[in-house]
Length: 235
Image 1 (cartoon, helix red, strand yellow):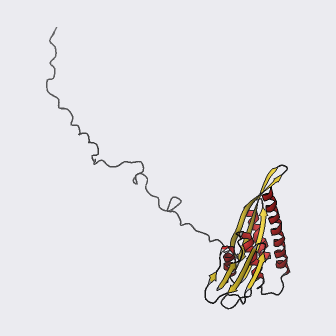
Image 2 (cartoon, helix red, strand yellow):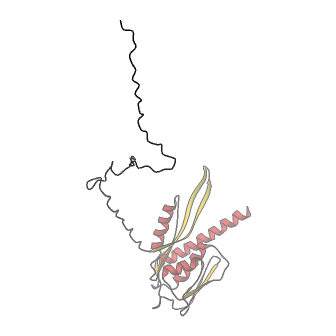
Image 3 (cartoon, one colour):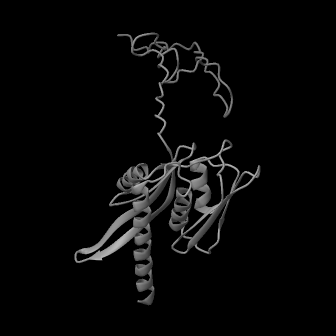
């Protein structure tokens, strides 16, 4: 029986070559195999996955008259069930060709109040008698509550006015006109009312019963508001 141990292979084995580790911040030549590469998900052409079509924008229809918000306020009434809040809106409209209108509206929401004011302003619209250069023929003046206004023509000086009176004259399309408020009232609604009442004296049609009734109604409403404010101040 052979008890000799088998000879071991003494030939040295060479280790497999290992690539050196890249240092931090060093660039590598390996291709970028990111998830969002263009090769993996090629761009489709045509069909549903193609290029997007340009959006089409629809132009809003131009309103019939130019509008200007004179005043908007929140009114709170104390009732048996609690407080009830409503909105009061005053709106002026015009076509910048000699027509002007003013309306007021109340509602539980601003959109409802604006719609009511616009409807009333269209009903109370009238045409102003103007000259060729969109000025007025003569001087006019009026008084509404504590607001006093004088409007007179000027020659080539443009529109000289302030406060809501200027907005009313711009909506009417008047030029070369000077307007002066002879009062210390800063109530925008009353200033717009006195401008409306002043321009009513320059109406093109002889009689407008609806507009005259509206002015009288506004005067009564202004008196009631003044009394309510006086009562609140005394309390």
